[in-house]
Image (cartoon, rainbow, N blue to C red; front, side, top):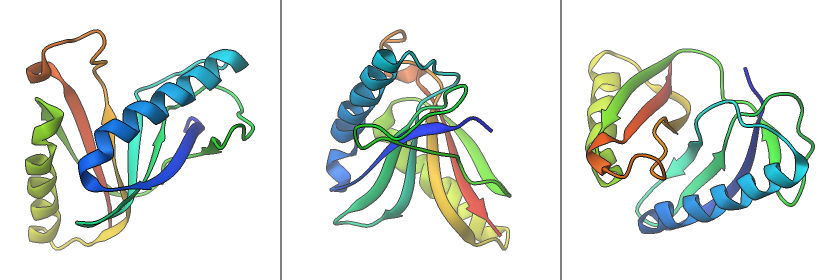
Length: 142
């Protein structure tokens, strides 16, 4: 599994997109200065999520090694069993996709067993139509 330079932060739920964009820009700038290549889609990993605060990490897979720099550290996504779904459409509709995924987890007798994350497989800088955005959702389960 590729190492991922990530920055961890806690933000209000309504500000996830704003902070994700800022942190991803910061990470990509750092990687560019260091000459480190990305090898996959950006991710947002959620450790906890409630009405007041979201504990999250923003990152991107890279090839090779990455030493901590400027508050960005190297980690790996969790390994193990996960429930997965793909959402096609605007980011503002991800809440419904998460509700469906978590409903499936519960209805099939599973429990969440770690963080959840999103992988953004379409670059909004290249695909302007939000109806064509593709986001993979992952929930670690037991």
